[in-house]
Image (cartoon, rainbow, N blue to C red; front, top):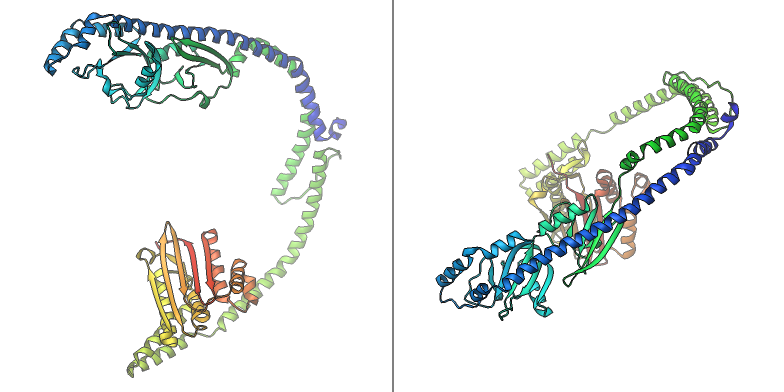
Length: 583
């Protein structure tokens, strides 16, 4: 069996496919299923042709019955007298109506035939609208009425969807109707017989059976379809929107002047049904196809499985930290190459383990030394509390001397200094951040005097939203130093915090000296490429870059900053963050 093991996996696959699948299937299955499909298609077309003829006959018969009802009523002298009589009052009309309907002539004819309802449109203004009679003024704007009048014909078959344009005297929904003039005794009255849509739909469904059947008008609208609901309350769909996958048969016909097309689609039987019909022949084919595949697959199985079993045992040994090489006869197929690579990997792992154990103790010693150095560095830091105590003493001295402005400035400075030193919590509320902004601007106003004017506005719903500390103060500081300080006349600084659609907007605007296009481009580039390495060597814009890095790390893609500035026109900075409210 070594010769088979030496074959490449691709070559083994080709042998399996060619011998076990291609040769038997090409000689038997192709012809078998081709003959079945050809026979099924021929039989299906013949059946669909008969079905289409039956559907045409049923629809034609329904229309013929409706026309016969219309003809009968058109020759009814009593109906003509009723329609032409002028009634003096409503009571006169209802009395005549009751006498006319006493024999239930109209009701008998349409309930016993294919008509679903009868509507007579009359020009007699004294007739009151009701179940069977309606004045033409109420329906003459409807499309079906106009189409019949414009045709000039004595009768017509129409299909339309009523959506209220008949002023409520025709039920909303789909309609297939026969319209005829009642002019046997003269006059311009018309009668409309609504065919029983449900009856036609059931007839088409019964005739088509498992197939899809459609009755279309000359514009491709589906008047009736086989199966499912009647959809009588929905507009006609178009055949272009319906899948016609499968064997199709079309039959064009004209029923009393109405061009129709009957389309039947046979989507075919499922594979399970075909297999059941040809189960005996299929069983014989499968038996023939199994002989050669079994032999080839037996060789293929042992070639792969025996060596995979050995590899599996060795891999289980690796889980228990036992690294052993696979001891099998060398082969030249893909699996043999994998075994060789595995043995090489095991040897390399053993070497690496020895190296790691030797260096592990040295790394532990270095780590301990590093930790001790960090502890010494922390212990060597100056405790800042004496600075706060000193500032508080100066502030109290100023209060005693009634130097309230100086005391207030020292208090603001002390709070800002404490916030700058204590970083145990890097996240603060917008309200707290804006208070720090207020303190900083009061310090700067103490310095600039009337040269600085400022405002801080925060929406109430933004106050509890959490943001990184000094997210706004840093940019306000930049506006003071590079905007107000460089301007001879000073300027103003406005801070606005707002919220919209789940996003927080931080806007810092100043009317200072502004920046040139080159300076603005340079600042935007530093912000775009900001990282920790830049801070190690940066000489300017350190505060802004530091803040941007923190915002990027915290918000990721939910952070955006936009800066606009011009020389002498001030600077506008807008920071957009995803809201994170304090819980």
